[in-house]
Image 1 (cartoon, rainbow over the protein chains, first blue to last red):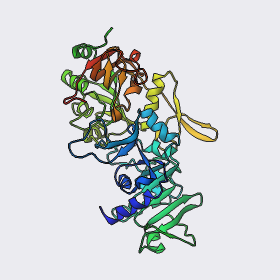
Image 2: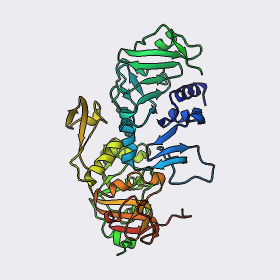
Image 3: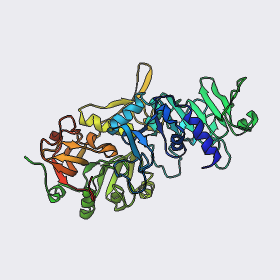
Image 4: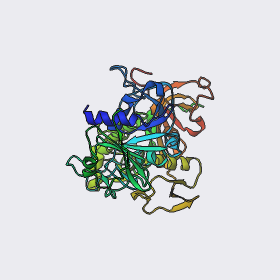
Amino acid sequence: MSDARELIAKRVADFFEAGNLGNLGIGLPTLVANYLPAAKNVMLHSENGFIGIGPNPEPGTEDKDIVNAGGMPVTIVPGGVAFDSSMSFGLARGGHVDVSVLGALEVDEKGNLANWNVPGKLVPGMGGAMDLVVGAKKVVIAMEHTQKDGSPKILNKCTLPLTAVGVVDYIVTELGVMEVTDEGIVLRELAPGVSVVDIQCKTEATLIVPETIGSMER
Amino acid sequence: MSKIKPLEEVTALFKDGQVMMIGGFLCAGTPDIFIDALIDMNIKDLTVIANDTGFPERGIGRLVVNKQIKKMIATHVGTNKETGRQMNSGEMEVDLVPQGTLAERIRAAGVGLGGILTPTGVGTLIEEGKQKLTIGGKDFLLELPLRADIALLNAWKADTSGNLVYRVAARNFNPLMAMAADLVIVAAENIVEVGELGPDEIITPGTLVDIIVSAPVKGGL
């Protein structure tokens, strides 16, 4: 794992409070599970129909009925519970998921999120993403700060088809931690060795810079 | 009266052009025995309502590869490149629905509701052509019920009267679809006598189920 992804995943894990129910999207967000301390007793929701995602199974002990939302074999922890798709998304839309962590193609200063559709390319579908962000108490975007070609992903206004409007609360990248507020995007923390100028140069939206900025490293 | 029937009695009910709901999430809880039969019979022009289109070589994806689906209503088709190809070439119509909305549209049909109001999709492409209602200052989309001619489901255990129990992530859309189709056909991995499943354990009441086909899993569970 690259240091950048590890830094992001570790910091996102800090958004969870003891006893929270969380949902981790596919890819980078899934790594957050590695940094959730057991003492916090966080339970993870799997959109395909259960609470209590456990560690990956030992080779040879995979169970066809215990898979995550990516179809990969997982385990279910003691106290885990299975349910149908209506309950699964009822939990999400109904405000019962404390923290939902997703990746993004674009985020803007109004907290709009685009992560499901690039016109002209193959459209895989939104799956559960639209529901997972409309009801979660806290929506945290975990992503690399820019596109592969270096162009910004944190914009004044999203250009891609939206997943949802005004839902993003926090953005965590390898450069820093940002909070989306009514006034705009506030820079809360910087990664080690990153300056305000560095992060602003790679961000289209104008970051609001408070007097004190924390360190992202824990 | 036992609802257990041989597979041939079920396949005689399959016809071109039917609307079919198929349970499962990326093949967990998908009744492969009926997919096999649909392929063997080459039933065409199906409208399929399901969470996803599986993989090209597994689950519902095999019906896509065999070009048996005219219209697909699903939440995510990214695990099957052939679905994307047929969607882009216009060979198959694909209607993408947010997963929570798909679940509630199926449930609405099954429980006699005229539709549901959801905040999911407000302000996105999903709201196009839909009625928007403002309730308590918040916007909701009116989403309409989805019904099918046939629901093809998978259960972990069934008793001979059709009471069903599912297992962990293989439950997903199966219990919702059991209420939303004219004919409900279940592949059961294990069949037990009436009375062996306790009333608090049963998830789908047998009264919703028309036919059970025995479909033991290799190795068993």
